[in-house]
Image (cartoon, rainbow, N blue to C red; front, top):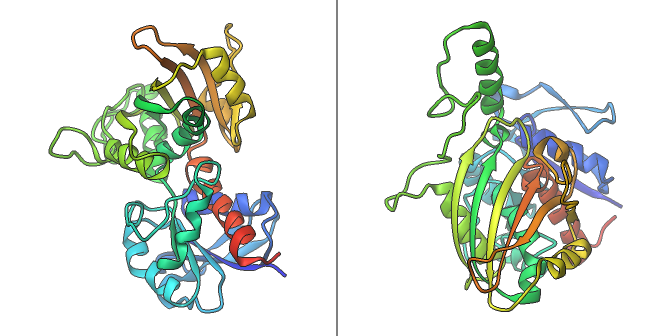
Length: 341
């Protein structure tokens, strides 16, 4: 016996990826519903590469009663309106938006990092999926934190345009083509030209000069991994379609050599260490697309602090940063609580 699963926001980048991951991982579904906004009602989306087409249902009229799990990939607005309704109907919500992440009654879960946190879902019947840049970071940090206790992290991100949705991907494509043929470039989704450029600005600015994306990385890492960790982030949008990269500098309480760190990372769940210390002996965003792993490369000691390491972390932001992590949460939920399939 399997689950009845609703994918909310099924026509978007992350929603489609959720369908793909559910099919690839053979998640035990008796029924899958594609749920979307009224304007997408009646359109069809494919369930992975199975050839099975699902007709989109209108979220305004969808009855969540009798459904086991709802994977929400529709943004904070729909999550605010419909996630509590789904939860009240007995459907467990796994939400990809930022809306519930810092709610003390909602667990924020990365299964390789804090699986026990999922047990708190019963407070509201909602589980939060972390920000894409946070998810891959904590997967790489967790085994090192267990070994030597992290005091401080400084991270610079190189985030792909797919993190801004389909409009971001379309803008990179349109601007790149316009530049090649000599047409004018007009930013619409982003604040400045993204083609052949980088933009040190993701989400809105806060009073202290940081952006909301940077704030998310700080508070989410603390909630998921350890509230004592100090973190400073600079989040940058780069002209890459899919795949987020991060340059991570870590200061530990205890000594941890680069060699020991690599030994730990080789065995860590969800991590793939690719560090050959030669030309091409590392992973770039293009190579991580479609993969479930969080890739770590260029692990080396930082001589500027007493116990410091630097590393390069890359992951498919539509997968581990969103759809894959949500499905992994659903799998964990099934193993620990729902006991079907």
